[in-house]
Amino acid sequence: MDFDVCIKAEVKNDKYVRMRVWERGAGITWACGTGSCATLVACVLNKRTQRTAQIELDGGILTIQWADNNRIYMTGPATKVFTATWAD
Image (cartoon, rainbow, N blue to C red; front, side, top):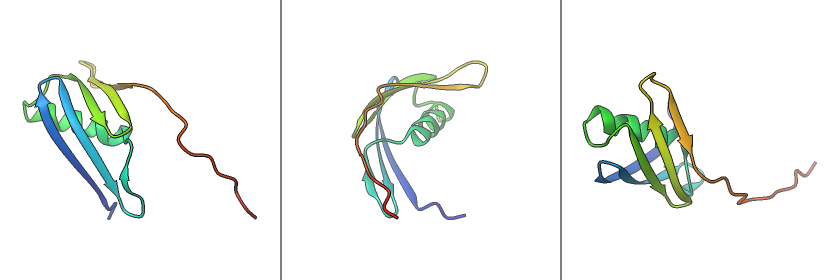
């Protein structure tokens, strides 16, 4: 499979990561919840962050928690950024 997604993450400290996402056809995106969750897991497995950290994206900050039961929780704001009308 080829997803053509690039994630760049910079660990600022054990509770804060700055992340950017590039997607084919869209370029730099404002946010990526799935990528944020995956970034936290990668950071924890590499002993770079704690199991709860803030992930800063261009569109805002998400708090990601990898709980002891192995579930991942994401909290943060939801903002309408685009409106479109489907043309027939």
